[in-house]
Length: 399
Ligand code: ADP
Image (cartoon, rainbow, N blue to C red; front, side, top):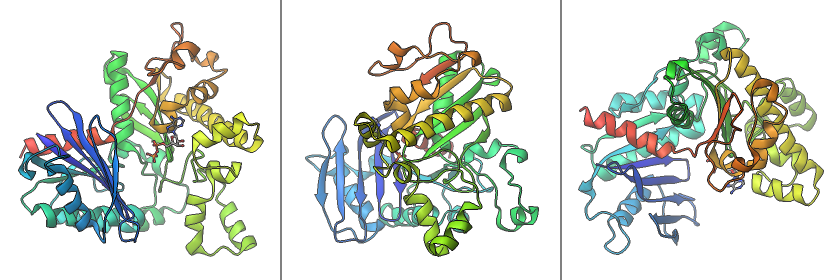
């Protein structure tokens, strides 16, 4: 069975075709800058380099058309006919309190995803549009499934997801912690449980997904009990250009002092803060570490803030879970920045955490804790697309 995995944004459509027999990517790419003069498609066949071609892509329907053409292209394609694709799996960011697991797309499911647009306007709208565009290109008979970023977090208890604001706003607007990157936390915690060789019920794991957006979760007995992102993906640790958790009083204070209107504040918190805002250098960890190498103190500060916050989350989640067996690092920063893994776990021997520096600096590290570290520390490359494909496979196979 071959499954097409889609991650749609307002001006982009990422795609990946996965062969479920091998669980390997056959081809992947992105249609980007959709709706602009600079639109293009990037296509990469497994084992080959990516090729970017400028193409007119006015909307997601055209993006799907280009993706299907690329996949069946006689020279560069990976399948001979679209009928080889058994199903399409979509990433949807916000499943709200409605979806606690992945589902088959129906008209009702599309309506429900649309009903959650007020909670995640930048995500759920283009994702619902992409499902409709996919239907137009593949026809209604093609099974489509949706996998939600929030659903792995559905097991959080009320005390972890409720904010201390009047309860009526939780009831009226569904304001609560939802958590994001759920497919990643689910994938890497599942792999960690396998590596630990224990029963899921007997494990207490902190998963650190550190990318452009970052979130840290407490996974007890295989289930999420708390996570750092909240009502939106802004809360939690410092990110590339997102502020993470700040004293809420800072926001109206700044709006008043700087004359920033409500309409711009969201974009300010998402795009002007984080590493970028603190360092003044970049939102990208590679550039932050390069600047640190050149003695830039504010880049160092941005880096130190992240390491310190990771340490604090590990401490608080260890307390919340009543102990700790394992820490996992994943995503762009977590997988590729050994120094940051070492620095965030420094001076934690009293917690039973000790990093083996040599293992941590290996090219493809996995277990990076010392032999005498009570807590195991793993680097596990995340694979959100595979989770989406596996869920889609399971749903479609049960039809
Ligand atoms: P997203 O959240 O957009 O999926 P990623 O998981 O790809 O992002 O993470 C992007 C972050 O990972 C950036 O800060 C980038 O600098 C960092 N990163 C990616 N590759 C490396 C690398 N080889 N070394 C250091 N940092 C890296």
